[in-house]
Amino acid sequence: MKPWTRPGFCPTSKGVAVHDHWAPYWRYTGCEHVLCNAHHLRELNYSDELTGHLWPRLLRESLLQANEAVAQAKEQGLTHLPRDQILAYPHEIMQGSQRRTLPVSSSGSVVRCHR
Image (cartoon, rainbow, N blue to C red; front, side):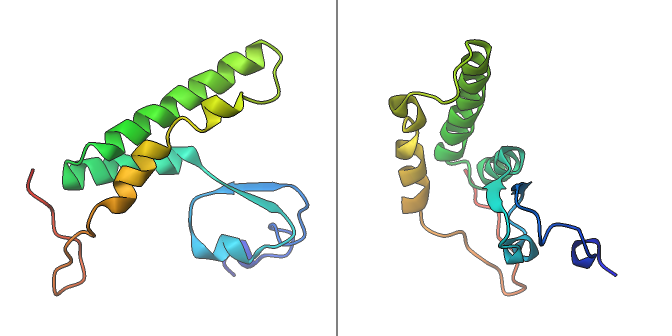
C-alpha cells in the first residue's frame, strides 16, 4: 500500500498540507493546500541552470527576501506582511511566464539551452 493511500494519511485532515506539486496530494479536499517554497527554490535553481535566464534568479532572490521579511515580522509580533511587501515580485513572475517554452527532444526530455 502506498503511504498516501493509507487510512489516516491526510484525507480527513482539516489542517494545512504543505507539499510539492505532486498530483496525488491535490486529491485531498479536507485541508488547505500550501506549496513548499523549498521545492519552488529547487525548481528555480533548475530553471536557472537549464536556461540561463535572469528571471529564475530574481524570483529566487525575492522568495528568500520574503522569507527573511516573514522572520523579522514574527520577531516583531506581527501576523502578516504589509500588502506592498507581499506584492513585490510579480515582475519576475511575469518575465518567466512570457518566456518561450523549453525545447523538448524526441525522447521527451528537456534540451539544455545554451547561454
